[in-house]
Length: 93
Length: 141
Image 1: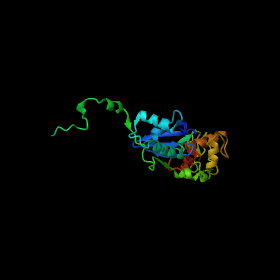
Image 2: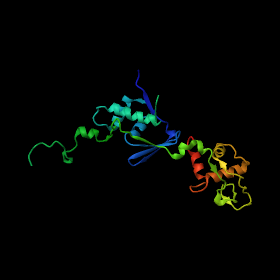
Image 3: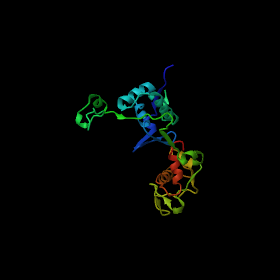
Image 4: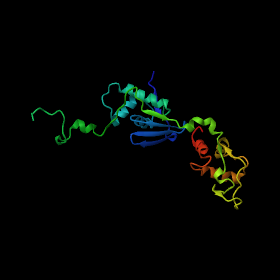
């Protein structure tokens, strides 16, 4: 089975405002504001252009950021994706 | 000081190829599996969708009862030329929502409807009906 691919909610659905250590994201369809801390805003941004599976997302993030020891990076990334998915900010395609 | 080789380089050591290659990448922690990086703030208003449509917007608010409504939505003395007598009762959130979507407020014509809506759009915090109107602005409200 192919790994699921994820994409960020459409830019037209979100109001994004960086607030120092947080990023406030207002999700228009739900009327809910989410306060994100790293790495959630970076994940959202990486998924804004095109859907990616977890492996491709990890590769993309590591091109831009130093993610430290690989270790269980993909498992942690999946945990972050699950949070963003639960919030409605990311969806599987 | 002894002559033991230093494990860490200093700025005087000049560029180190491997470090130079990674210095443009900022560190990003993916976090622990159980540590949430998303916190939702659910405004109380958003949770009362059912009641939002039943809330009321008096036109004008009680502090200016008796005033008429000018076309631009401002309140003016009664019977000012070109202004409209206020509606006989407050509007509900549902009625205003429909009107904002292109409908018409009850007991209004096309001109007074526009004036009343302009009044409602100009509502500010502290004025009667403001919270109700603000609730209607929220998606799902």
